[in-house]
Image (cartoon, rainbow, N blue to C red; front, side, top):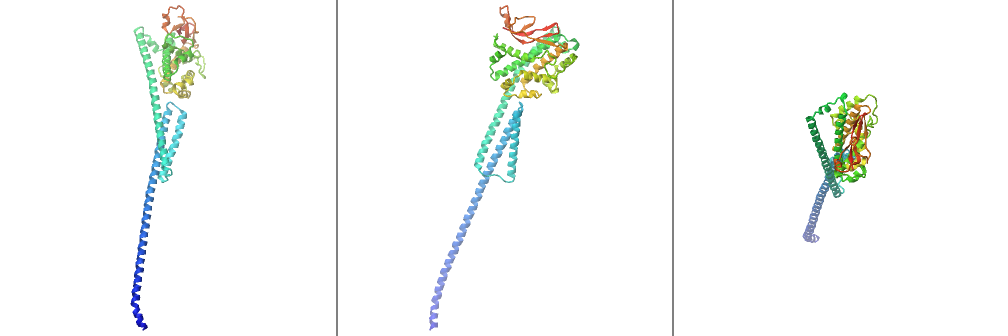
Length: 439
């Protein structure tokens, strides 16, 4: 009976077992499917995170590269601006500006080298990229403005130099035209020009001295005109300057104010003329030197001052040129006219500034030097210089008036306001009139 009951119960148990088995299988399958779905979701999230990380890294790399490039261009613009400043400081010569620009260029080149190494080693700093870009762009704009300012100042200086050169050339042209007319008159008369062009030491006369005094006076007046032009260009008070040179003088017209400046330049240029050394320290005073003075005269006569001092930078004339420039052109005057002391520094160093102002001065100084050499070619005692006191009565024997208007006046007594060009005594007999301005 037990066997019957057992057999009777078995099918139901088996069916129930199968049911439970199916349920368990379905649940297991569902859990596995959920597990697969969870794993797939996690993989998707990881993939998305990885993609986001890659995009973020690309953006950071791009920002870092943008900052690097901006820094590179800012550094290059700084080199360009500094190099422009270096060129500007070379003419006219500015030693402090050159040294400063040189140090800056070296620093910026080192900075470029560091940027190159950072790029090659991929050590580009990505921190504060936006700030770096903005600062670099600001610096680049500042450097561009600096470059434009330097270029503008350079063009202004070139324009000013050209204006001065034009004025100088105009005066030279006028002087050449006057000399040509003089040559024509001489050729049409007795033709003494050839004798002055072929001077001989044994045949020197006071007339030769007078001829070269005229040349010296013309050069001085040409320099004075250029100096006044420069003063007017920087808005000098010309009347105040004239009063400081020759006070209490009433001029016939405003154009005569130039005679005051001419008197000042002649006073400085001819200072020490009666001395064989022309007040140049180190110049020997041996006895037999007449021929040597004449040789100096002939050596320099046909050369420009710049050519001669380039040829003989340690010559007595080069020392004279330096001495007279430093004596005549006051540092405050040069600084006012040109904004710096570059020309003075070059002259002090034994060099010649490449400016029309210095060329005009050097030409006047050369003519005065030639006159000095010619005077001591006559006699070792040379020529003594004389001036007349202000207020003296005019004498045609010792004086020549530079203003003919004074002779149109009905006044019989004409007084000397001041001496413009000094007079000279050659030996014991010959006298060369001084040039004066009459009240």
